[in-house]
Amino acid sequence: MNFKLKKIDAVIIVALIIIAGIVLLKIDVKPPLDVGETPEFEFIIDEVNKKIIVDYVSEEVLWKDIEIKGDCSRAYLSTYVVKGDEITNCKGTITLKYIPTGKELGSWTFAKEEKPPSSIVPGFERVVTPEDEGRHYDKLLVKREWWTFTVVFDQDSKLPGWTATISFNHMALGDLLGTLKPDMMVLTLNSPDGNQYGGLVNKKRGGGIILQPTLDARSPGVDVTYEKSYAKGTAPKWHVHAEDKDIDGSHEIIMKLDYSASNSPIWIHSNRAFDKGSGSIAEYIFLGCKVNGTVSIDGEEYNVKGIGHHQHSWSSGLLKLAIKGWDWNHITLDNGWNIYYSNYYLSKQIAPTKTYKINPFSTVIITTDQGSTLTKLESTTIEIEKSDKLFLLLKMPTQTNVSAEAKLVSQFLLKTYDIGLNIEINDDNTFDKIWKFPTYVGMKIGRSTVTGSLTWSDEDGSHNVKLNGIGTIWNMRH
Image 1 (cartoon, rainbow, N blue to C red):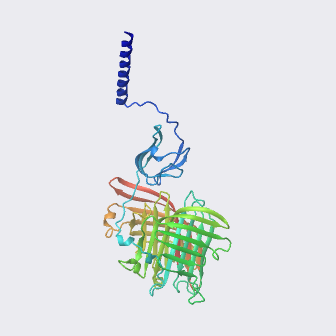
Image 2: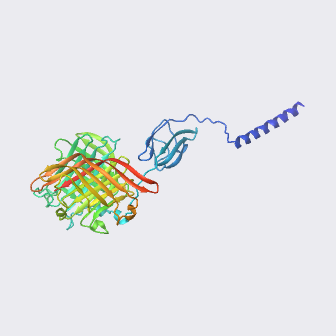
Image 3: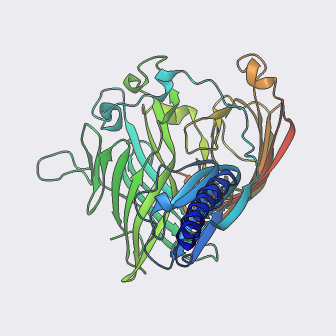
């Protein structure tokens, strides 16, 4: 009897275990596992660039053990979680959970990106070959050629908010009349609090075997030298090494900067409708380049990084007879956008303040993604609000208002968005150079501050994006 009861008990127990297991599976209850504690994580949230950046992790963790919910890119993540890893292109709400313990690591909501309507740009306007990047002043009709690199250093750089301009300039012989020194180089370094280093120098150009030119350039690609300074590379990467041997007698400045363009350039001007690099007058620019390197000031070296622009132009000697001045500004905005603004003046700028309603040689380009998409505004109104009198009739702008919109005829589709830009450009810290009699040429090169707004309307309603940023500015008058 006792034996039969024990057998029945065993059967009942086994049946209960099976039934309990089925019930647990049905209600998705699993027995606890020894999974340990959740590692410690710290993240930096970059709302401007739509990133979640790993700042700290307490132990070795695999990314496969972290669940990422939401619309984002995991392209920059590898096997292990390490400081500096980035979850990019975040949209809406992003939630991270540590899978082994089921603990939520954080949840963040990124505001919907406001992006203005972009222009339709033909492909041929964005194609630059290695031959285009190289030397053109050896051609009969080209007398002037410039290679320019600018940068605004990031706030987390060792020189936050500083700007630099490096330019190698083969001038036409009549550009600096009376100086007989047409090979020019610019190296300026300007801080937010008024510190200024470097400047500009122009030297003689030799033409024989013994007396070589100070500036020399070759093709293909960028390959230009000026004494110990040089720029070399082919799109999308260039290395720039600049020293101020004779530019700044009070300080020793050495810059070693690597430029990397994320996207194709845009032709600004050319007297050729197609094959623009074959023109005798041409200009293109790479917008929103990533810049990394070092800046040495009087022997103290600073690691720097930022956003810059690379511009290359060439023209005939006769252009000086028509162009009496220009304003260039490469602008890096706090929200990650970039603006390129330039205007060429066909008459001498005598009045200290003046409004220009018709500007046929003005260019305004906005990019929200380092040049991947572009918004070109072809109708501009420029108001010179304040000027400095440098010498006699040389008056250089110190405060300029630029308003721009789409043209009704040539930009009909863009015009339907009622898009409008209004920015105030203030010269903040510039190097000023004057060539007096008989040249009468003045230049201001350095740092500017920019405020304003961009407005447009689309299917999501009306938009008004406030703009704040820093520019590298170059004004010329003669």
